[in-house]
Amino acid sequence: MTSTSDESEDWRPVATVGDTPGPSIQRIKIDGYDLVLVRTDGGVHAAQGSCPHERADLGKARLEGCRLVCPRHLASFDLRTGAPSRGWKVADLKLYPARIAGERVEIDLAAVRRNPPMGQKAVWDFTGGAG
Image 1 (cartoon, one colour):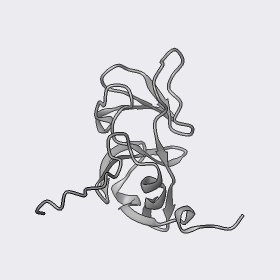
Image 2 (image 1 turned 135 degrees about the horizontal axis):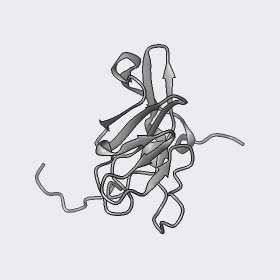
Image 3 (image 1 turned 60 degrees about the vertical axis):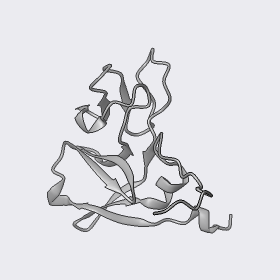
């Protein structure tokens, strides 16, 4: 399959390995998007910064293995798939490609732009209002 510009990757450094000891959860902002950067024993993960259920701040979540536990209602989300814990009828947690490259922790910004965190979709402004 031929790649288009919409499918390209745009890896951006967001932290250093030393800044993100595992296991840990950090709120980050990249290009205006609120995300959480999560280090587990299994690696590094990036996800939307608020819970898809009631928009709770996932920077205050608890980490249980590879699950992120919402601080408000205690549902948890699998950091490998985004799926909520059994019994919860909520949207999956949006996940984004993250990696460790040398001493840098990077997130694919192109993936974030293609599927923005809830409540952060780009909106066109045709009003010409002052900026």
